Every structure is written in C-alpha cells, then in structure tokens.
Image (tube, rainbow, N blue to C red; front, side, top):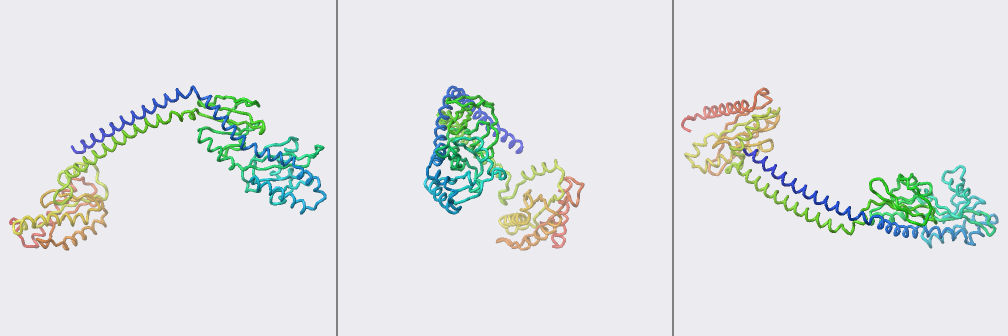
Length: 477
C-alpha cells in the first residue's frame, strides 16, 4: 500500500511539473512568434544601418595602413635611398633602412614594416636586413612575383608574417617609383589579424551578426574564425563593384548585406538572422520568462518541501521508536518485495533473539529489559549497518537482510559475538543473544521464504543450546 501511494504521489508531482513546463514553453513560443512577426518588418532597414556602421569602422581600421603604405611609397627619402643603394655598402643601406623603418614602427605602432629593393631583392625591416626575396624558389615570396605582374599602385595580401612567428597578417603592399615611373621596389606595413579581431568580435557580439571581408574571387580574407581564412565563401551572392548596399536572401531565412570597399577592392558582407533588431523587445520577453521561471521555482520548492515532509512522515512510520531500527511494517514490505525476486548470490538473512529478556523484566524491571533491547539493536547496527537493513520484528526478535560474501559473514559473526560479550549496561551488566544465519550461497536453490525459515530454525537451535548449557528451564523464562 505504501509503495502504491508513493507511486501515485510521484505521478502527481510529475504531472504538475509537466503542466507548468508545457505552459512555460507555450508562453515562450507565443512570445517569440509574436516578436518574429514584429521584427520582420524592420529587418532589412536595420541590417543596412548595421552594415553602414560596420563599414565605417572597418574602413577606418584598414584604410589607415593603406594611407601609410602609399605615403611611404612617395617618401623622397625612401626613393633616394633605393636609387643610391648601389653606391652604398650592404651595412650602410641596412642601417639607413633600419632607422627609417624603426621610426615608422615606433611612431605608428605597426608590428610589421618593410621595404623590398627590386634591384637587389633585399628585404629590409625594422630589425635590419631580413633576407633576399626569391619568388621563384621561396613560397613565402610568391606574393612578390604576383605583385610585379599586376603592375598596380598598391595591393592587399593576407598571409603569414615570418617575422612574427607566422601570425596571420594583412599586408598593404605599395609600389615605389621614381619621378620617371621607374619601378624601384615595394614598401608597406602589415596589420596582424588580432589587431582587428577585437573590433570584429565586438561588432558581431553587439549586433549578433557575422562579418566577413571577401575578395573579388570569393575568398574569405578576414573572419573572426581563423579556420575560415582563404576558404571560399559558401553563398553565391553575385557580388559586383558599386557604391550601394545590396541585400541578399540566404538559406534558412537569413539575409546578408554587402558593400564594395573600393579602396581595398574587397566586399564587406554582413550576415544576419534578423535577431539584432529584437534587442528592443528583449526586455519584455525577459520579464515574461523571469515570471514563468519564478512561478516554476516556487512550485518546485513547494512540491519538494511537501515531498520531504511526506518522506519524513513515511520514514517515521517505518521506524521502531525504541531502537531507531526499521520496524515490523517495514519488514513485511521488504519481505513481500524479496518474495517476488530471485535471491542475489551474496544475500544473507540473519535472525536474532534476546536470551533472558523475560527474566530481566521480571527481576530487574522493564527498564533493564528495554536496555537489553537497545543494546541488541546497537550491537547489530555496529556490525551489520554497513551491509544491509536491520529490523526489530517483535519484542525480543530482530532480523537483518545483508549483502556480503561468505568470508565477510564469518568475520561479522565473530565481530557480533565479541561486541555482545563486551556490552555492559547500567541496569544490567550482560547481554546474550541467539543468532541464526542462512545465505543464498549456501542454499542457492531456495527462495526467500525458505531461506528465512532456515535462519529461524538455526536461531531456535542456538537458543535451545544456550538454555541447555546454562541449565535454565526455558518454561520458566
């Protein structure tokens, strides 16, 4: 009956929680659905405004190194230095270039500043002469050959900066020419990706969008996820140069806004799922969710308190008041449960009866008898408590259902005998008990009822032997 009531209580608890949870989910769904309907009207305009802001920020971030590169390319000092390079020793040229590039680096905080002489193919940076450029044999120098074939004023290149432990870098390469247009070399600066990374990450987080810079061939040149760099953009946007913002519908209900950056010859692409504009409605949704969660927490806590109170009352109804062991009711429920199950391999049933309890009650009073009962409970709890359940099933009768091996059982029998021998009460000095043990290992083919009967018979045999040895007429006790 108790198990059936507990099952019903659990079902009610689960049903109540499910109803509240479903109500919460429905409320959230309706709120989000309403928000989606409202936000669709303004998605494109808000996306264009976001793209404009991002365009301004990125242009400001990347236009500066372009300006610096072009300024260096037209610096008369640098032009004369390259023209006079053949009249100077390598050390003299290196010192002059190093001083010049160090000044730019220290003044503008660029980590990569360089000059390549076309005549000598020397690669100078702020540390001096780095190497001799060899685009035909060194893959790191392949870009130089490409730059020569393009015959452009400046170009942007994304690659690894050898001077900074192969950090991903955007290089701004500018052509150096004299007054007659003779090509003298290349100069420029490198902007490490992490310098712009924080900018892109903050904008993506603020607006909940994805920001990409894509070249005219459809390759990703700038992405906060470095694993995507130089990979092909997954969506075909049919990009073309122009000054307007262009909208694109993407799979999954997303949209993209693109803008051509003429100075960089790249495209800014801002992907959005329409969630950015929902910020103004978020507080309303958050309030609804908070209220639902508050109600759920209160309900769960209330059910928890009721459950704990019910469990405490149930435990109290299954506990013997005098010994704090499990009582006869708990024993009957456990016995019914065990009768329906096959016995485990290391199952042991123990029957215990107090010797001379009636004599103690008659001669020393019930207080002494109660002391024997509590003493027996304490001894059994000390020896058996770690291995199973202990019950008081009658006035002087106890039982234990344990899960132990034969070796452990032998040790526990000795331990119980020693514990009982060492026990000493205030009103009565000695305690004596009779025990019966039966294990499923010893009787593998029996069920619970037969095993308990064997244990009882062994206990009665031990009790009879106790009275025989003591010379006590059992009919008078």
